[in-house]
Amino acid sequence: MPLLQLPYGRSILPLDAPDGAVVLEPRALPALADPSAAVRAALTDPIASAPLRDLARGARTATIVVNDITRPCPSRLLVEALLEELAAAGLSDRDVTLLVATGNHRPNTPAELEAMLGADLCRRLRVVNHDGRDPAVLVTVGVTPRGVPVEVNRLVVEPDLTILTGNISPHQTAGFSGGRKSIMPGVASERSLRTHHSAPIRSLLPVMGQIDANAFHEEAVAAARIVGVDFIVNSVKNSRGELVAVVAGDLEAAHAAGVARCEAAWRVNVGQPFDVAVVSAGGYPKDIDLHQAQKAVASAELVTRPGAPIVLVAKCSDGMGRFAAALLRADSPQVVIDEFLTEGFRGDEHTSKAYMFARALREHPIVVVSDRLERETLQRMFLDWAPTPDAGLTRALAIAGPASRIAVAPHAVDCIFSLAPVTQPADD
Image (tube, rainbow, N blue to C red):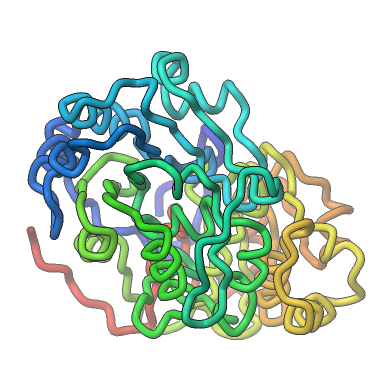
């Protein structure tokens, strides 16, 4: 087998995988020939909604919610097209606010905002980082059916028009990202997240690609409906980061159309579980820190046998993330699991992320390949470390045995892995 290339930060790392290793990649859907035209077409012919410029007539203010730096999205492209439609309805730049859906993440820096939106948009528009801990920016507008308080940034409640942007990709808890997730957790308070991000609303197992019977998804939809979202525009990408589809319109109907397109690209059936998995989070920004890179581990959990080692390849240029504290002070992964089940989500240490690592560690040895994380710190968190993917695989095979069935997933974060029988996808 030739050398494999694993995304790592803004570069790649090679892996000399042995013959017989199975490379798990999503389907290579073709990129849109003209992304700008596709966005404009979606806005003028939306799904289950009037065109945006018709909705916007008579509005005096609008908020556009955009992803933060940890969520890859063509935000500049989407916002520029939205501004054209809003201008046609009579809204000027001074009437529009961009609200960055940070959820429980840190605020984005000015340099990151410019990288996401471009310097021109940052100059033209008011751009605000959401802060779920600041009571001055929050307002309570209702409660979901399962009791989640809908306490959100007032910038999505007070304007005449609320528009969500985002990217639809597989998600280990929500099933798929995009749509309603821009509200809950994107611009919700930490008080809301304490309920929404805890069991039983949060599944205790990975639910990549699952929306049906997913309380986390259902409660997020309910929250967005209570807020009163007027319109969404979401993108779908392939493994090269190219746009393959743009959907716009109703909160649920447009998102469902994007989910169908996403699933066609990212579902991978593997037939039987593997003895070893080598996974990359997919490079920057998906491996910006260990918090984000954990999603690749969740993907590996779905297709590995109990006891199978997982090698996680992730740059982690921003380090660990807040979740590390819960693992560092614990005597075992089970302590972290018990703490989360008893106390639920706490944003100060992001205990749900600590739980997800602990859940995987209870079943799998995990080796992290990163030149930004220290071996000693990782070992205190019950993780191992290796300097290269080859060294990580060698360590994994020493645990699992040389005859192990090996999976290699260069874009694991975005794949929907399943033990269903391997099938040949139909051509478009």
